[in-house]
Amino acid sequence: MTRLTFSGIRNHKRVTVTRVDGALSGDLEAVAWIRYVAACLEGQILGPISGPYTSSRHLADPFAAAELIRSIFPARWPRRAICRCAALHRARSCERAVRSCL
Image 1 (cartoon, rainbow, N blue to C red):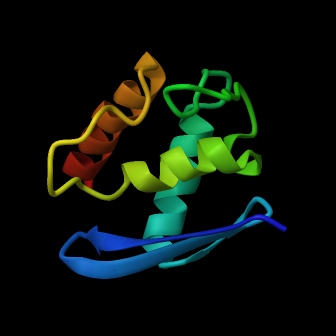
Image 2 (image 1 turned 90 degrees about the vertical axis):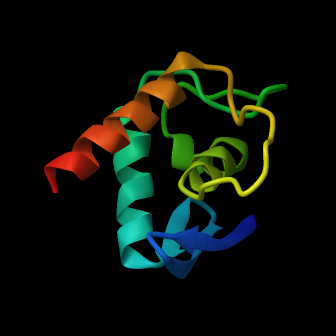
């Protein structure tokens, strides 16, 4: 059993997201957004900078899932890139576009 729990501030409120063996739970809006981004990135290479990488079923892989979950929380300090792949950067641009339409 692989359990990952991340907490942070998103949209001015404290949220927690937990992943247990590929299943997400926690804040409903944050979980829905993570699932949406994972679906957008299906077929793209994703993972931490040093690997391992996945190209599908990102939430099933704990390393790729951790990167996706971390990506929804804004950084309060400069940090190195979560992932060097262009797909994640496209997802962030997609996030801004979707938010502007809501």
